[in-house]
Image (cartoon, rainbow, N blue to C red; front, side, top):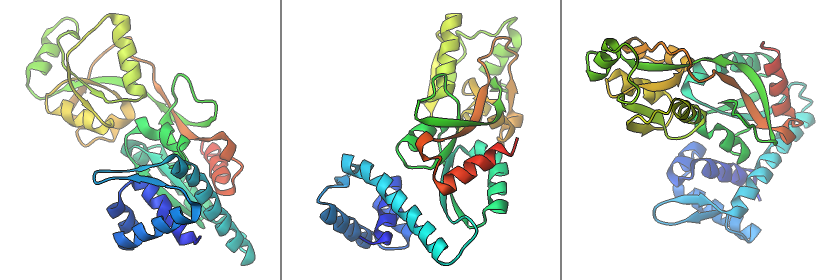
Length: 294
């Protein structure tokens, strides 16, 4: 078993796409496929379930992720110790939304680059609703996420800041902006909503609806928060978003914040990682560094 094969496996486990994984590893798709088959033969187990439409991790593949990451980490640490390296060496994968990368993540990455220049940071962006899942499934070492009402017992959380939740409506002349402007109170029952497909934002919005006994029409369900601002700016509906998303959106000037006295409580934003992995050298050092940013 070669270390390169472990890197190929992790790339495919993350992308679940032979084309994208081979591009990331700078090899051809047939070469990637051949190395994965060699690993499976060596382990006498299928790591991936493949058909003509998709690639998925098998149960064995899910278990093998931890082994592959730990082996590569130990290999990096061994090389550093043999060469007398005094600085921290290794890789750290982080997952967050685009908005979090602009705000909460930047100070942390700046500190990591200054303090631990030997650490290779791999940043992956996407829907924040998947942050906890990606950490629990070993796809990422840590992620930036809104703290849920019930945090999984195996997850450690380190607060980076807060973000208010605000309701937004379009500024552009349209039926929605006229309804908001001409009504003595906001006609929630008539306003079409654009909502996230999943995640803490969706959970809090639905809870808010229930408390107020509101059943508004839903115009669309989207992945991520950034698309919410874009669609609202086009006059397609209203939405609930973290204010930090609005502050970093190119469409911020095209929407208006609605004055709502009892909006859902703010998000507590922070780093999440598996509690049992905080003893690892790279992850633990960066986790402790985050505490010094406050």
